[in-house]
Length: 114
Length: 112
Image (cartoon, rainbow over all chains, first blue to last red; front, side):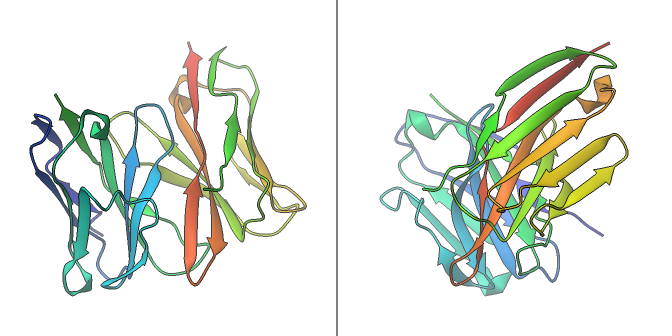
């Protein structure tokens, strides 16, 4: 079974530039998550999709971050414009729906904003 | 934002020692998961506990869910260098749909 795919793996940009991340979840997983993980800390949920609808984006900085899930499958997360504090690893995960299902994580994209 | 506090934040021990990591919250969770994350990779699920007071064992790892489903612990017996990593707890709560909150993380280093 193929895992969660993310690209790119690494990205370095200057502040005020734009960046986009892509995620392809495991086939059949209805729920898709985007997390931001600051070095050494636990992941913080940015946005959660159920199929192609948003169920939680309460911690997404909507003035600069946006995300979409096309046809309930792939997803993109965009930052425009980037700030220094956006430097982090952006993790995508997918799961079946429910409280006990495992979240399968991709390898993440390490973003450095200079 | 509801927080899941983990303690200790960092732990460096010798191979063969035992250790316990705690995950505490003031909120009740439907389930509690433990993940381990290695550098450059995403977290990988170790276990899910659902029932208050539940204890699960995975080889040298023992997981317990608190009776009130607000806290959990992870105990490792005879730690090995391969146990090195970032340990994360994650609680699931229902609010229209199931939502997960990750803990602050415990970074473990086991020295040979």
